[in-house]
Length: 206
Image (cartoon, rainbow, N blue to C red):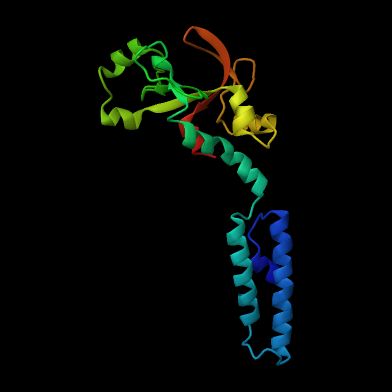
């Protein structure tokens, strides 16, 4: 079956339809070849159709659902672009010498190799002293606390934020609270609020 040769397994509906079109082209080419019309060798029309289909699929970017794949990339892309600049270190929010975080999207904390959350400067100095050793940097994780309004208005712009949040929770990227909600209560600088809690190494699993 020519279509089975062209179409990837578990392809999206659009990909299947395009592969069917190129399969018909391949079959037509092979019939024309058998009738002595093309002057091609057997199989050449199929290979040409496959090359055209592969080029189309490459330009599409994925054999899956483009919108679904794009939805899953929204949060990792946002953290990659804004993780350094728009998330204030939670253990330094009360430090007057800390540079201000402009257009803040939330907060972030270091999680030690032992799984301890660094919540203030005292925790930091007990764990690392004046500065982290390079090995400690490699072993540490970062957890992000994202403002819900930023998630809705910026991260999920053009998408239903409730659907995206549910998917992130399903994938283990968002941590649930004790009531099973997608967001958690957390306190920074003496103020308690709700945030989407993200552990950075979970983003790589998407």
